[in-house]
Length: 304
Image (cartoon, rainbow, N blue to C red):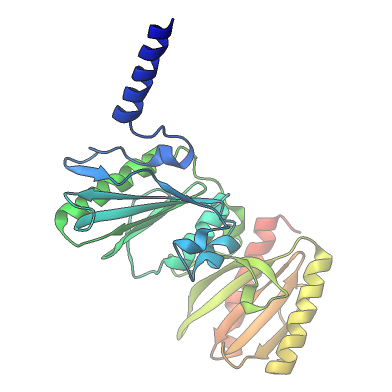
């Protein structure tokens, strides 16, 4: 019996030496060493929660947490030397597809080089970002050689395939019309829309109009009562900061104001939403896009 126990202990020791860490959760998404010839990984993934996220992204941790961040797993891959040729893979579990998109949408820019990665992703000189399902994946290259970029790209494809979650329908991001919307400018903002602490979250996007671009927005409330309260607070804020103008618009209530930093704005209340347009040089040029946003809200929300 004693000999059998000793043999079992030896087998367990050999298994722990010859096998890499047992993958589960976020760890199961990382490619194993040898995914590309000559590439290894440095130990096990390091894990972070909302309590210690600042240790790895000090200064940005609150941004991630505001979008529902749950967990980060980070792993360094290298070839030859971890100080020479390497890239780092950070996989963020954001808790929901909407949160993942929201965080991602704050990083992208319409002029970036977009690739068919996950639900959407872009490539820069410094790495790759994409989102899929509940996850935001950020891959940073440590040096700019072709072999490093190639390995990072292969790892990206492997991770994207391993994320099994199907692309979820994000109803909220469909509340703004696609017509005249500047591609890849749509953003989901989790809270404090229009930089107002009394407003909840919503969406915004850039739209082309005669003479330039403006920002269309929709703020989404839990109830009609909350939306009415938010509308009145926003109206009071603009009355103090810029003054109100009488302009007839759709919706149950509306107003226009000249703001100190965002040009002229048109705002209307519709059910559980506040919507409108910012960055107008002339109020008259915003009426068409306001009508378009209102009509789209009515259609999307099934209102009569």
